[in-house]
Image (cartoon, rainbow, N blue to C red; front, top):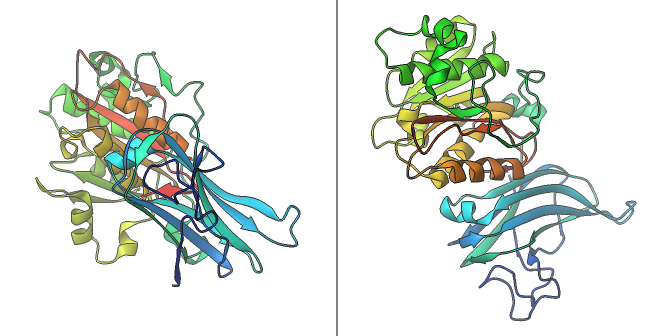
Length: 364
């Protein structure tokens, strides 16, 4: 696979970037300008642009990254071939690259651009852009869109709701005592091991309800369960016909290390229709860590696959942190289930974040 390294400022080498310390010495004619590579030829076929900041520090700002195609005989000759937006503070808190897939055509050249709009306070030591070939979906079944749950999701009227969370219609929500009185809690609790606390039973019942409601608890669906302790949901999913693998993450270990040890090849560790984690894996992490964990999990599911992250609310993860997470997920093109906070400040505890993976661009 050929990898091209692009000069991020090749199109306007003298112009200064909106992100401090980047670009040339001269003031840009566009106050929103961050970078614009020169147009380069790319081998025809599926391609991937990857953008990464070095030592990014940011308190506010959202960047829009685009791929532009120049085809001399095109009408018009320059067209947008991909777009992704990301919150700069989130990228700074949990560094990862921005990845934009696109399809290159013969005779065309391509440029990668970045612009911020509105308030921006950020600086970085460097910026790198690479363009490489990627395997087409038809050649890599693990990257084909998930066939499960396509008709099970519906768009909410608002990203955040003051409605009380319910197991009857699970979204991104936390534990409340009202939910243990619902019929679904009793129905699913009867299938779970006895002796667990109401919170532990709710967590397992919540995961099962999400899988049911979003069309993943079906025969043939491929799933991955990640936890730091006993995990009863996988057994029920297997009985429903799912092909599910459970991975134990030892204290002090990481998801990536546990997955690398479990799967003999990289291909075995991707292409899932759903992945869920238990809150014992999250601990007392903050919003930046939660966003990074979700990004890592999204990299393992198929396009359109489902991720359920059980986090733990408290001083390090409050309603504002949860809102930032789902806002950035939406900006990346993923679909996050509506957030229902309940009373997090009074009763911190497990909180489920539900995300359906984009079928286009990713940050990983």
